[in-house]
Image (cartoon, rainbow, N blue to C red):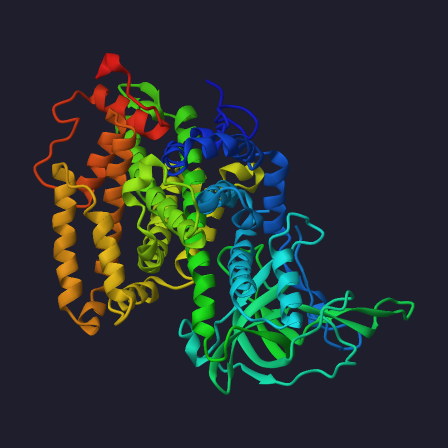
Length: 617
């Protein structure tokens, strides 16, 4: 036997990743469950192509490049003579589909499935994409429902058209500036001040060379966290005499007197009253610039009414929170794709000098199967939330619900109350549990999983883990979201409607023992919510959120079983119920089975086979 060297001896064969859309068992199931057949057949080819494209070497090279060549402030923020520059260089459409006609209440399901598949190859552009999505929804609402003057109409329409454009030369992304040093997640304590101070009609400054006017409000303050600092516009909060208010502002403005070249030619763009104080040094999401910003005379437009800033920003938060869950599941899906591929090629000891691949290890496949069950439960909850958002945005749609989800489609009056509580619940639960699952994917590769595999970027689970950790923090930490959930459920006006909506969905089907068990547990939780004060409930807000999330996922699992009954999905459902204490006295489909039978069923769960091989069951 010759000794190994750097260039001789054993080399592990590289795993080969498969298209997530066609080979991730959970994505395949929710695609069939939440979409009518005609829509599924229409969009499947494009999503399948996307699943191939995100694994293309060219795209993965861009991801590696974005990690290495991170954003920076040019010239340290000043030119050679000390004048401020503060422009960011970022080296290196998933919004538009949410606003195009044709798919009605299923628009968000299709849009967010695409985003989920793209997420792990996106170099974090999903963050500004999410904020652009939320900003577009806010502007769209006011364009349709507000009495805007012609000037405001022009400004908002221009921004909206850019946010949803598929043309890369025209499309915009958006920031979302709320967090300040004093309040953190408590945005009501903002120290940013907006003063109504219209520019004179002959003012030379404009939003762009095309003549879009700058806003009549002058905004001054300091924003402690501003993700997507290289965006084209922002939605921000500032205090006015009537309270906290929301504003739209472009990031740049056209200045005809600005020296724009070394020849002395004038006319160019500059930052719109924004000075970048410094960029944050973060654990992950490194291609995404996050900065501290000083605002001095930033020109902006009031959105809605003064003092209603929280109401306006809540529209954005609904979208960004759902998209945070989508991002988290995108990373889990990629992590499981890598873990499956690794298991197919990696050999380990089998005892008595034998060798076997990880796909033949009963323990390893049981571990991956249990991870797959958890992933699928969260996928069901996330796509259901996306469906609810689509229902809220298309209240007059003539489309009837797909038969598979008719039982969990609320009547129009309960859509918003249900979405109001499902959104914080979803974001808190999924982003928190996803971190654990992605780490488990990293562990399943052994030491290789812990490495920053930039030379084989498609195997870089460590990057997925780093990037996923922030999803549990931004747009509300777990405690912030749990508090939000309790406040929504105990709200003096809307709380009872939210509880009623939950009750209708959870008790819609009590035909079997599993359903009855869920209804029983929901009854106990419902009584707790109705009889205790908000203050008493808050001390156990996390526990309430987790229990309610698991009840909803259990209902969705049962729906999945009924839509496509089979041994594999029934066993997945049983394991989820057992792991969450949602039933007692129910035996496993594997009780008394030989190890080989369990191995085949676990393989069927992991790799998405509809039924395990009949010869072994």
